[in-house]
Amino acid sequence: MKIEYLGHSCFRLTESTGTSVVCDPYDSSIGYVMPEIAADAVTVSHRHYDHDNTGAVGGNPVIIDSECNYDLHGIRISAVKSFHDGQRGKCRGENLIFKFRMDGIDICHMGDLGEACSSELIELLLPVDVLLIPVGGNYTVDAEMAKEYVDRLMPDAVIPMHYRDKGCKLDIEKVDGFLQYFDEEDVYEAEDGEIEFTRRGSDNTRVIVLRRRNG
Image (tube, rainbow, N blue to C red; front, side, top):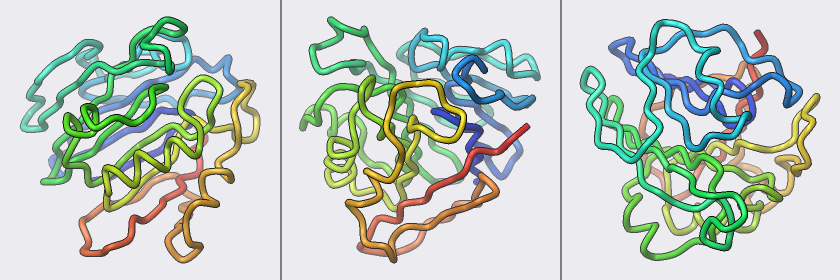
């Protein structure tokens, strides 16, 4: 399967069959230009402008924005509720965490997760092979809290998102604070913004930094 990073918390996940899903498309007012793309489905973690620009995705996709167990041409999609803040949604409301089963790989997109790690939530999410998690803090979990999720979920790979990159107008931190929690040899950077992912047997979690694809 292929993972493309489109900026902020937005990814396009494409199975070997060609079926694709876009997660959390953003409004370009955040400082990045949302690329022109198409997909079979769009998932929305919550209805904030930097995560729900569904109109930017072509191809007449199915919009999935609630708790679900959905089959998309053989791709299993499920969503569970979580909170956008550490006060059970009192500040920023609820957040959906999406899981995808594609080419035998379990991918988890955490959306704008803001709540602290709990055994109950971990149990709902396991197993996870690829973890897409916010690390920029302020509106979501910060780098330290994200690392705790990584330690508890033990994915094969983690891809950080929702951090401040060049041009970003949001008050969030850069990815560097998250990377400092990992050994240098476990951090891999893909400048072209995409990766073909296959499972590998390893005791260490890979951190894959995908640089935003432009246009």
